Image (cartoon, rainbow, N blue to C red; front, side, top):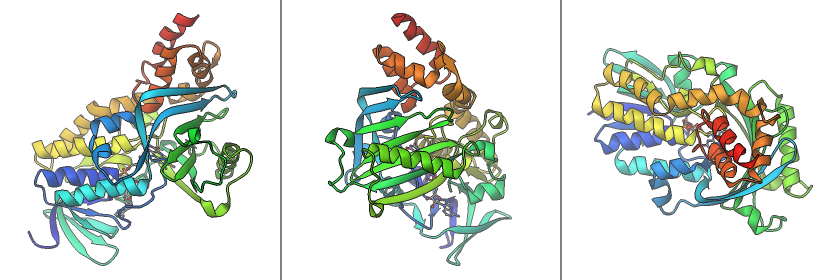
Length: 395
Ligand SMILES: Cc1cc2nc3c(=O)[nH]c(=O)nc-3n(C[C@H](O)[C@H](O)[C@H](O)COP(=O)(O)OP(=O)(O)OC[C@H]3O[C@@H](n4cnc5c(N)ncnc54)[C@H](O)[C@@H]3O)c2cc1C
């Protein structure tokens, strides 16, 4: 192979791109991975759900990448009802710089070549693709993968950007812990989720090693940026007992999350001849929780499988379409259908989020269903039925 040729070029070294590069390189594919930032603090909660830890065991097995294990969650309903739940199988919260570093280090160890530069242009050639990087290099590849996130440049060029209805807007703060604030030890290991009234989304407080991560996410266009920032500031102030932490300790961030509308799934494409999209670039995040790290890994796995069993240029791309739908696509589509009901529907005469928190106070089974729903372990399709079944045991 010549120096500026690779069999597969992956644009973006986040969880989706770097994990894909690992899988491809491990199976002997000549893979090149581009990212201008390398491992960086991507705007994110960094919450890695239990099933991701179970299916991608390297996340906890790799040493030297600190994360916080969470066994306790407090939820506050739109009517200020509160519940704290302890659970046995933890989820993890990572700094995104650490998480991205872990995955990128694995990709490089597996043999993928990493180019620390952004792809600023690409075009088709007779036998694949030609790519130009921001630092002036030119590369050729047979197969092209867009793993460049929710604002994907690859997606824009290949099939067009997401419409507003397919996106959520999120803002947040990373607040350095300095030992002088008034958090109790208990809070440092506890996640807090608040469901505001008339809101398609939620606020969160996630402890990470040395940092508290706060955020708010809701459907794009539902609230103005100013309204979201106000909600977030009030939440942070509340968390610290009425006083905002000093501004030097706070890093503000904002970004979009793909949360596809239910009408978008039937026509959704994640590949075409000679190319594919993975992770956020493909639209693969849970529309209800905004959780996308698991689906970034999962779509990378599915694409790696498709490429290892089928030839690229047609068969692998078709297999990928079938496989992502069967593996997690239908589940995400169902979540899109359930989204309005989850945040605005009622259950036994109360808003669902309020009813779940009310009932959870009295019933272990409801508590489990609620936590599982937030951890991605409970099917949204059966959520209402499962709650009803458990509620009957109380009534
Ligand atoms: C505020 C917020 C909070 C969130 N919280 C959670 C959470 O707690 N848990 C969870 O599971 N999910 C969460 N998500 C979603 C999660 O961040 C994404 O789903 C996940 O990062 C998707 O991974 P990815 O690899 O597809 O994309 P990304 O992580 O976005 O990675 C894309 C990479 O592509 C690179 N790139 C971009 N353009 C180019 C280019 N032209 N050339 C080369 N490289 C390029 C970028 O530098 C980046 O490194 C949150 C999202 C937001 C915005």
